[in-house]
Image 1: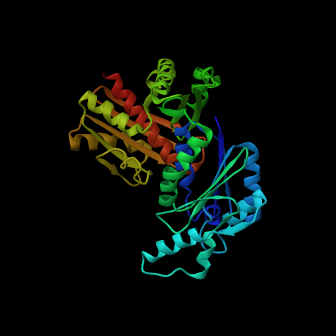
Image 2: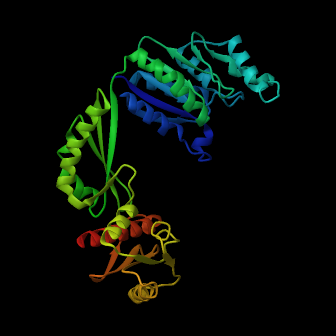
Image 3: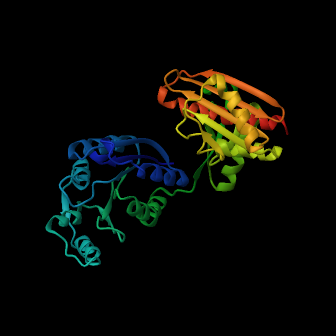
Length: 375
């Protein structure tokens, strides 16, 4: 199977002015084709540095995809950079210029002189029409590489990727495999402990298993390369069953499942109604649990009393309360269910900015576990 690298181009990305969403989209399309993505690079609008990045990527991967830098201005250097990387000149294509003229005329305008830049491509390149924008793109092929330059505008890039690039790559590399991924979400056990329990699975070559730690949640990624989706699903299912058997209720969901959904589903299964209160969380618990009130200046000593009062007033079966202190990096959680009352005081060793998310995730997992005990 071929490998690929993605080069996103734009100083505005490096400066944090815009978020690069193209890389994620391209990566998922490549994954679905069975192409291994080795590296992603972001380069500013500098011709020489882009050319260096392209040369480097060509040494490591058969497929090199650039996105961005195909506009009409002097700070859109991708055409020149690709030509420089491959040791050729750029050349004007009359048919591409006519395409630019036709697209702009739809808006009742005439193209400016600088837009002629968009009709230039590296010599010998296969030009790809852009029916949804003004920036034509292109493919340059060598004996061992394919260099593809796509627009930076997401809707243009996505359209051309599916309509022109995917078919080209399938034909060039005879792609007949897919890569499918399933992500299992875990809470209640840290990354290190989970690693201890499934370490042998992380050494597999296909499917592969990897961990990604978030704030209070750990993801287990299972990726299978197979000839078709059915075969990939069977490979993933075998590993997933093993993981779930080893970790039990630590696994609360998969793929798009969310921790708050798992907690609320467990509460609903018990037939409980629920209310929440929070303090120091900037509404984070309220955004994830309905009927949660934000109470300023609530302190740990009064948390349980406040939770009892809220539960009594609302006449609910269960109540959960969370206080977070960013300054002290601590959290206090109180929980009332028909089975009793519990409190929990925890300290956090991570960055202060993550305290609130960590506190909420721990509270949601605690609620989920206590509700499941009632099953």
